Image (cartoon, rainbow, N blue to C red; front, side, top):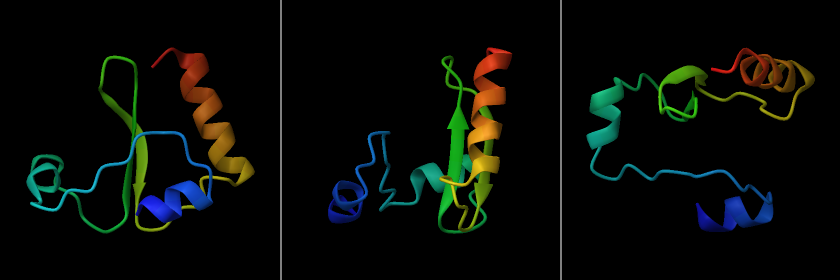
Amino acid sequence: MKPYVEDNHLTFPHLMDQTNEVSRVFMVPATPTTFLLNREGRVVGGGAGFRDWGAPEAHQLIEALLEDGS
């Protein structure tokens, strides 16, 4: 995972859940699964399976969540 993160210049935190502990807590249905968390740590968005987080629609979603103060 580290080479992928570095090659794509990703700056947000990533979690490798090798023991499936977090997967069980959040009932992860697929890999990859992305959770968007607010400043309080609450899940406010995301997606199961591949998502193009670089797409304009994804940017609009994130901007809307930021404006909402979530």
